[in-house]
Image (cartoon, rainbow, N blue to C red; front, side):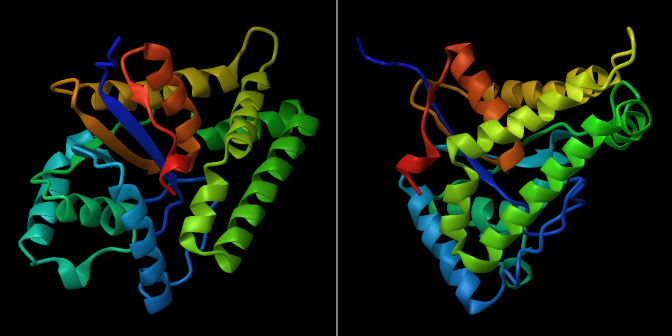
Length: 252
């Protein structure tokens, strides 16, 4: 039987520039504008173009779609080329879309406070109620950040992305997120409030927004997102039964 499902490829990346990055741990992307790094970015672009996406979705809030649209239209009309930002939306998203002749690029993010519980508050709560778990989470975060920074400092961008998108690496990140579910006292489940009302909610909204981009079974959606989202997004796309989910390792 012919597979008539649309395709999706989640391209997990690190945040190469500071576009209001709210991640708990920050990385130094090491002069993305240098000739060496631009050559490495070109290598990745050529790899990802082989997927032949029909639409490209990026980590930019839908409520600010007009801003992204204005930037992309300026880019394809050659007004923005010299001022291209260093983040992955411009470096990968804009370039791949333009080179494939796309007239639009699509924001699919939702990133707003929900449930009144920021992650920082969950950590403070753990520090007071479960110091062992608090220390474990801090160690997990610092170890992961150190490892990612070492990759960035010593490997090409393609090699960094291959390592960051490795299934075992993604599984380890998911394990860390689920440890937050244990931030609770009696029937006060603060960690679950954050996970359910913000983290899982955000990724489900991203999934929904990507699904809205599908007009026919020939669609091939490329989703460029922070790698921390990849485990859940792949899980939602696969679990929905509505997409043929491609592996990033078939292209990088």
